[in-house]
Image (cartoon, rainbow, N blue to C red; front, top):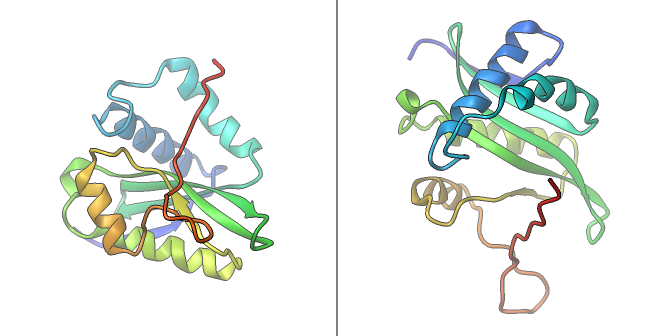
Length: 162
């Protein structure tokens, strides 16, 4: 590893936009992502869609000139705390760079940003059998969300509208 830089992406910068596309596709192909490449039409709509979405925050990791990690995040809002939150929608490190602590460094940058913008929490979802990622998140302080005095945790549900 040369010189690592982690920063908030500028989607109007062609190098950043290209890195977002490349890293998103690498993540999609990974078995813990989508397990297959994204369709060409999705890739064509990705950057314009992210630009239009006002809460998009993408953090990129570069090793010299090479993009090696990404965290695609979106700001949300907690009605119970009356403060913003940040959701990590995708977090991926390219395979050759895994196991070197880059995900933790990326999470520290996201946490610092979240504190700067007064977020009350950081949320994410992780595939249940992705033990490696779960271990990283748990070491960083993430746990299944529990609300109130209930002893049951929150579940992530989705309804596909495609």
